[in-house]
Length: 233
Image (cartoon, rainbow, N blue to C red; front, side, top):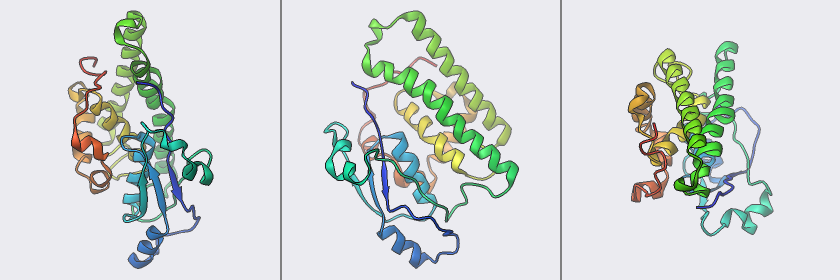
């Protein structure tokens, strides 16, 4: 399996305070949005969870095929050569207003991208996509496995300190950033029994409406056969 560049695109981008929008106005805004997304993509999933939390369900969308290289299609690249965008505030308050809590949320968001994504995806899982395990250096594989295990233990400790969610009693953007990595890991064979706080968190959030509504559709159809994390943790 080759490495692929995964992007997402949400249109249009609007800068406004949407916390006072009526349900009707929110529905109208959702109708004016368009999302290009890929099933099972961690970046796409983060965006879709945030949109659901913000009450933007019902937006127009197109599922693109990575196998057919549709993320490089003219419709996507014409709108944004990078295929990336963002979203603004309404619905669930994903970024707290308090300075201390906001700082913690931003810190965990950065850690998820700078550390967990690197140690789980870039350094580890992509290796299995490009190289057969029997062709890997066993010492290097053991080192990377331990590095990932140490990283997951750190997040397990975070959840042990905060309780229900990653930064405290409320679901925030830190959870939007973190959960898809865990979901992706479980899909690829990660056993959470060694990380009881993450396991409880994963099981609880899997039933959250925004996550259920955005669960990758092809994951519902098949458990998948690519399981490089099976037996590793």
